[in-house]
Image 1 (cartoon, helix red, strand yellow):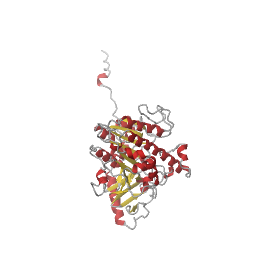
Image 2 (tube, helix red, strand yellow):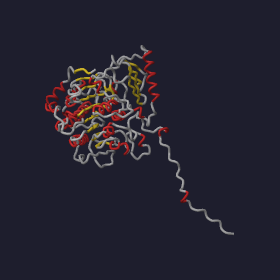
Image 3 (cartoon, helix red, strand yellow):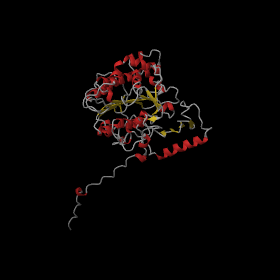
Image 4 (cartoon, helix red, strand yellow):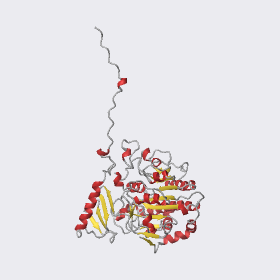
Length: 478
């Protein structure tokens, strides 16, 4: 059920005061001939629910996100489809649960496109994505940021439905863009990226803003996934100075998040300035829970990035669509990263791919549909796993015994009911085991190696062409 927001953080009020034109322009008329909506999908990188003002943080690092939340619907229980980044992002891009694609583990950092089994890791070539679905309907599509879906040419954004890209092939070892250097980067932007940028995020922001400006006369869809909080963090001195009372990695994270929020603000301001706000849907979603080791906060939630406790799975999420979704509201039922694709393509009037696990959230957010979008959730990442059903959650930790929680009443997972609720424990364990046993095997393992069963069979030995065989020597005459 969508409910009005009773009280937003002070950050939102400051942001609204600083950006008076932002809300006013939201009602600007669309350009002539552009009657179809756009979509901007922003994937936050390891941003914890305790880091953003619109979910209660007093850090003050996200004024633009907080102002956007006041214009849209905040999902109070949004879940990543995996506690690891690249499988979670695969779910956002495809609408499918990553385990159902054999995408159980994060992409290994050292994979080269020339390695024999490179294409086994990541999205299988030809997998339908939000980009391919909307490109088929006539939208200009783009991807900017950290891809993490594979390293071969067949797995690159331009081969997976995105007509424009400016991206990091996989690794993010430096924060300074080095186009043309053989260092794991693949930055392309139709000339927008050059050696003059001091920071990778600034180069990518220029790519995103340029795309929004160039495509203003067409319907477009852009996915932006800036690697702002991927370690190592390297915030600017100016951003660090904004948090004088913090220290260590918490200060570095806050400064990096401030920079990311500023990049998002640039994109939103460009949409407004080009008269596209009234016809642009904006979705913001985190890929995983925040990494406390690198300074993030998951608020009161238990667990961390990489775990199947709430702190590793709950993510910030906003959906804004002028004229169709009530601004300044919240939605309290569980939703997931898999819901982004079906929600966006349905809002833009296009069909979703035939086989997806996500749900179109628009009927639930508008009040046209009641009940829960999902009956149950399952997660599995190696030894870490969980199942959530009927207000209960079963968690298999990385170490120790499984536990269960009345998650609707105990979101901080403080009281383990495994011993007191044997029937509930058994029911959840059996549900999880049935789901787990129905999955295809992981296409690669946590260390990046390929199981023998997933390897492509070696080609048969090549025999010489019979037509090119040398004729046998004639026997000498007697």
